[in-house]
Image (cartoon, rainbow, N blue to C red; front, top):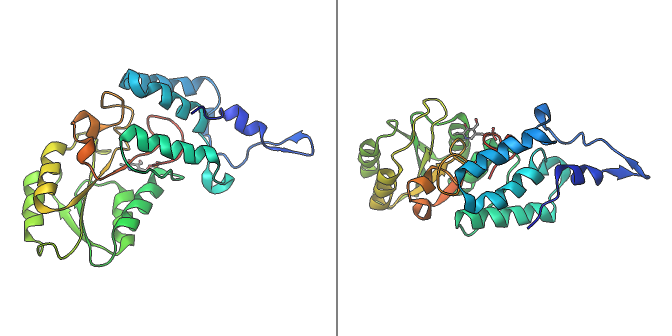
Length: 238
Ligand SMILES: Cc1ncc(COP(=O)(O)O)c(C=O)c1O
């Protein structure tokens, strides 16, 4: 699908024949308009030929728009369908920021009585989301599938939903998760897994989809979260 360009979106803001400025956007340093957008597209191109055509449309059309302020358009729903298709998942939801994507996802999936297993180096959005969900938090040593297995093994069997949350590429240390081993442990102990690809989306994988794709476990990861504020240089999350 062809999305409207940033320019055509602003052309819609007219009243009484006068064109209005789009003050509901939060495009910083003019990234949505013009040349710098090409940087985001180039970064995605480096991720692989297959998806770059579609992701170019995303970069060209949606940098700088805020659903919360401007409303949900048919194009947003089309973007969600495209995202679900890119990742081979049943559905996708676009959020106003990556922070809200974690809040929305973890909050929707978990509540009191559930357990969320968090890596010790988790981003603030993941920690806040888990606290707000009311689920029990179990901390796991950073990037340690063995420690994860030990802690999952201590939980009462199948009495509560368990969600393991990891990042593909960690924001503070810059290291990557041993995802194949972590997915294996999750399967072994009947836990769901959510991977935050905020820093790895557009960087890793044949189609630039992130660390799960690079590790060949995209189809075994239950939930994915990402942001448009890193590689895409915009605002929004999924
Ligand atoms: C791992 C991780 N998840 C989520 C986010 C939130 O993304 P956003 O900037 O779109 O709110 C960030 C932002 O720094 C992040 O590093």
